[in-house]
Image (cartoon, rainbow, N blue to C red; front, side, top):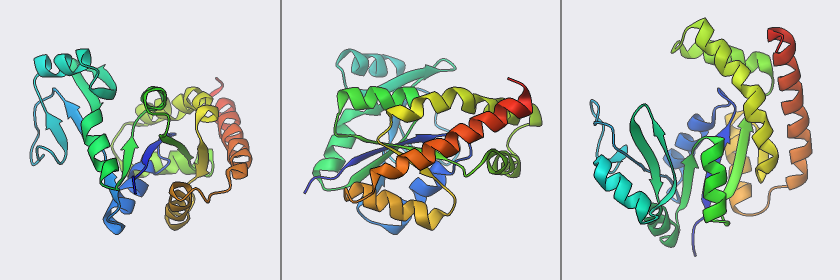
Length: 209
């Protein structure tokens, strides 16, 4: 039996990365998609595990040959999702998790219409802010920019197959399993979208945008 392609996106601090890694750690039939990049390998990164590290010329050749599900250029380096790796894993019966931004997710859906798009959000604006601060990765100014970005990102949610509120990781993992098995109640999207609207309203009021 073929596996599924699960494309995960969402608001900053929705916990999508944590959920993806937990699924892979717990279940043998889930794997993370591996991106190709032209940037230099860092520290303990491993070829074929963290990224496929390739030259700019090779990457651009792959673009010409239509070998990517999606790709983008960021800070003078290319990043993209090779079709072959995803195809090979799906044919082996693996459920491939691809965690990317919204624009890339919609690109993937156009190329591979069987892809399942899942949009994650925190339970409220306060939770999002607390999670971003607790990471201690950015300044308050950078965090506030990430929070305000939610107003833009929220517009993409209606294009996703499923919208999930990540309140408890165990519930989110169960929901993803049900989605893969085509047993999740899609009507719950309406409730999640209402929560998303409230998050956006709260952000607009707090930051006067």
